[in-house]
Image (cartoon, rainbow, N blue to C red; front, top):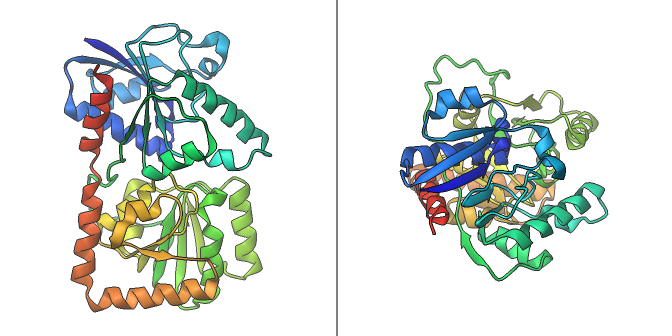
Amino acid sequence: MKRVFLESHNLKNRTSGFGVFNYELIKAIERQHPEDLEITLNLKNKSHYQQEFGDFFKYNLYTGLQRNKLFRITKKFDVWHSLNQNIKVEPMFKQKKYILTVHDVNFAQDEKNKTNLSRIKLFKEKLKKADLITYISHYAKEQTYKFFEVPAVEERIIYNGNPIREIYDLSKIRPKVPVDRPYFYSIGDFLEKKNFHSLVRMMKEIPDYELILSGSNKKVYGDFIRSLIAELRLEDRVILTGRVSEEEKQYYIQNSEAFLFPSIGEGFGLPPIEAMAFGKPVFLSNQASLPEIGADAAFYWEDFDPIYMKEFLFKKLDEFHQNPAFFQEKLKTRAAFFNWDETAKQYIDCYRF
């Protein structure tokens, strides 16, 4: 029986892409229940996840000290899986097989930022250790090759799955934001790459609609978005909800006119898949991984001029409403292509050697 260690402490933040990836992958691995593997999770709140995931996994207590070289994990495993490229928790000793999953390397594009410099250094060290590198998209692989010297090791593209596994009963949901007129919706951590400011500027040109933005917005970019909303006097039409529950998220998606996601640095893009699963019209930027994810089911902005964005949005919405059944089938079929159980099977295969 092979012993596998999943560095999974990012599971704690389920509103981030890393948190969703950790949670959905671990749940799917548990459903697959590979009996030839002994899998250890690294988690801060062990008891909570023992109740949820059961006894299939073993559990190691995560502490912040593990990020320090002096307090690295000393146990040896057959496989160590670093679940994202920014993880500072590393094994003290060389493992038999070190797997690195790359989500994006956007940090490599701005070396003037001190945080990015440390991430670049860390990532280079991870690449040197890696026996197998997995990428969550072809875009993530292309960007890695663009900015880094990649070792000649095995590589695989393994797509994420569709986060929507359960459709909630929303009849009793009372959202934080009253929805009393048509609105567009988006969600994500407030980072500059999300390009939410392009949506805010577009909304200045659309007086009869609201824009609801969900996600953690306490960082610098969140302050910038708030100041932009005030500058454009859109306080009554652009609403920031902060983090929302899964039920609230589904409510906002299902009741929206369209899902808007103009990100310019997405390594994969889970939220658009969630919206596609409900057959909602999805508008994306034509940059990064998003054309790879949305394929021909989504609509793509080619630039971010607010008037162009508005005109393109309503032109494509008009096309959608002329033949909704056709577009909804395309959207739902594309969303179903991404499956966490299939993703888990591919990672389990990586653990066997």
